[in-house]
Image (cartoon, rainbow, N blue to C red; front, side):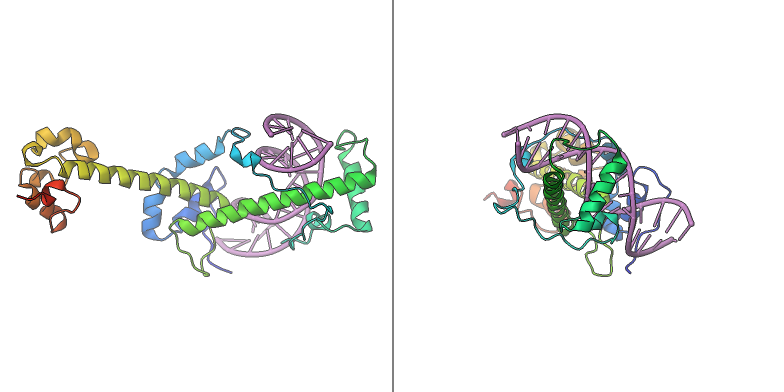
Length: 243
DNA sequence: TAGGCCATCTGGTCCT
DNA sequence: AGGACCAGATGGCCTA
């Protein structure tokens, strides 16, 4: 169908990394940074931790009538599909066969009558399916707001790539915000304080030597700001002060 | 054909 | 007790 990133040797996040590399240049350069750490963190997630507010959200029991939601057409027509939402005699047989295959001790509740048990199982399956659909909807929502090529000709991000990309996007935005704050603080220091030495603790990037405005730091404020953006900065209080 | 990704089923565990 | 969450198992689809 659509373009798909090349496979990578297996390993934590290997294929997802390839997927990230398939992103358009800027997005990849900006967001792929720190991928390895993200993958490691993802692999080491504390499963079962934090059962936060989501736990109280409630996916809702089947309605009073016990009606199960229509099972979506499964992608595969295999064994998984044959025991989905709809009930039939064949499915009951398949259910029993599977139950026997799993052997003793595998039954969830031996005290229930098979019919009851089967009905409960179907209801649990439906809930789980709904939960996974909600999770996928949330992932779609996430894909919609992170920067990568959204187009019908581009295969959508995998789940793992979506999460890793989102994480890196958040980190990047946080970093940009931080730099912007430092810049505003620097511009607001005023001419007297703006020598490279005096300004060093507040310069963006924390390094006067690499700070692009160090040469302009000694200039009067409007000139200093203009050397950055071409015009006095609207963010700088000195540029906006009345003489 | 192997490997990656995914949907679904399932049993176990925890929480309300 | 029932619901939510989790992880393992299974099987289908797709691509290199």
